[in-house]
Length: 94
Image (cartoon, rainbow, N blue to C red):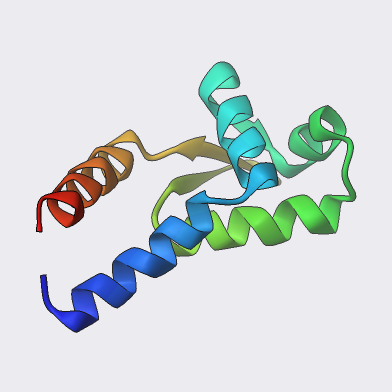
């Protein structure tokens, strides 16, 4: 793994290694999909806080979003999570 790949891996792992984002991902895993409103109510945070953390996870491809009418629903991207698991495995082998 070269430096650029390793640096990208670090950024992704930093996104995952956050207590609130882990709670958020757990909620999405249990519910399947959820809107920002549902997330902020379930996790008892301001809506802007939930949105910021969803943005971090979305930039790394960990969550996906889908518009349904005027609402946007978020879900986990399990294919991306599998890729990340393989990436971590590769890092630990090197």
